Image (cartoon, rainbow, N blue to C red; front, side):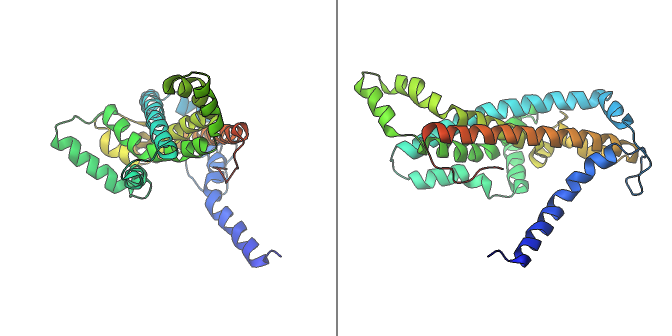
Length: 268
């Protein structure tokens, strides 16, 4: 029997968690520069203002480069790490996988400051490249977690059958293993892309003179007249993030069903 108190707590928690997000589109379409109730009327001028901001497009282009590169590199590293952790046994396996997953529990502020100190010490100029390195560090554990589930759900009989038919390890991995875990790879790409696009702390510390989207949005909140346009942008980003996460979850479940594995829970 479900507890009424527990149900009320769950509902209250969800309202507390998502109410601020639901307020974004309300004020994004509000015909006032003041973010407060009562609403003044309906308008789309903030979306027009956002669309005409050239600096915003520059920041968006930089963020697309960062997020796209991060998702590809992190997923590639995740494939290797997940395959090794689920298929092979080697010395210090637990410790090495633990080190890979460590950024999941480290505060991003500590990671960002540590990377900043290292880059300055070895005279690496802060740029889009350093942001990509930082984002790869924090997104690779997510890729490993997703792809480990995909590799664990594989039936070893497929691989053994390929060996019996004369295929080598490389051909078997390319022709048999990769197609079977492709939904997990797509899911990893989308999740890493979304995390990188939304990430602020590492981008703020490591971007240098290059403007990235998250840092640009943060800077615009210093000017009250720019706030409604940033709320309009936030509304679009929320919709895009939900869409990408939904697609990622679809491919994750499709991959589990394809390999005959058991679904132990996902992103949504």
